[in-house]
Image (cartoon, rainbow, N blue to C red; front, side, top):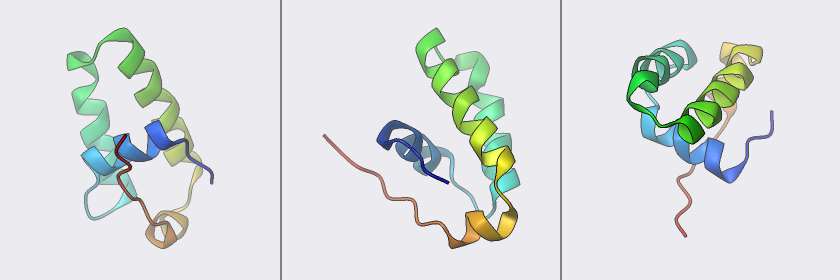
Length: 66
């Protein structure tokens, strides 16, 4: 699965021990996000839902600064 820099950074912010917990943390934060961030988060969550747990575990997520 290919993630944009923005999506990967978002995953890094909410990353936990597994894919489902990472998605749950992101979903819990949605009400506190502005519209643009909410769109990014929803798209990222949709990609995470299409991944398997094994794919997530094998993926390396690195925070990329400006």
